[in-house]
Length: 95
Image (cartoon, rainbow, N blue to C red; front, side):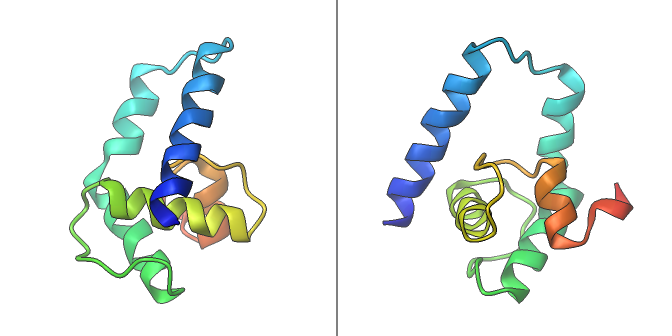
């Protein structure tokens, strides 16, 4: 079920990207920041969404945890640590 959510989110993200949204180089670096990903993983783990190793890698397990949290909290579903996710997790002030 969670893998299905990840794939649906990935498809939605690709659709949104092709409908006029241009990802800047800054946003790609921002999303791949291992320190940020680690903080997101820890915040998701403390809320029961992430159960793997906190390693700063934005892999499949992290993407699934992000999407599950976003769905449960009515946030736009995108398997990346975007600003709305950071605000919802309470770590936006740090970035």
